[in-house]
Length: 82
Image (tube, rainbow, N blue to C red; front, side, top):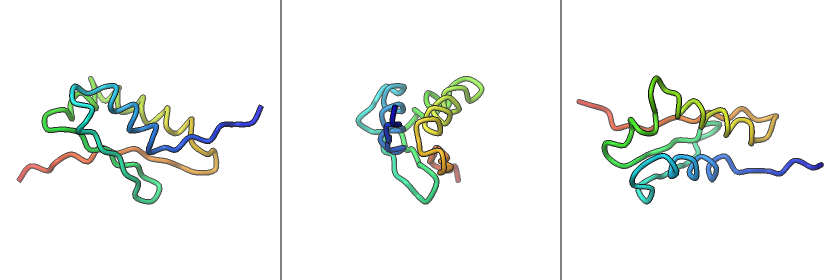
């Protein structure tokens, strides 16, 4: 059975929108081998999850669905505190 090609950005966006309270504020973009996810204010904790379990699960699913010859990373673009 041929393997279906899945866009890592689309999959990351779908998964992140499924987790947060304000899915319309979720943005995902690609910078090289990394998919950057931005969520609404105060929702970083929901995406990270307890002990990082949610973001780690998203990373695992995106890597499993992407091209096996391509290493894809998923990172959260959180605002930095001054």
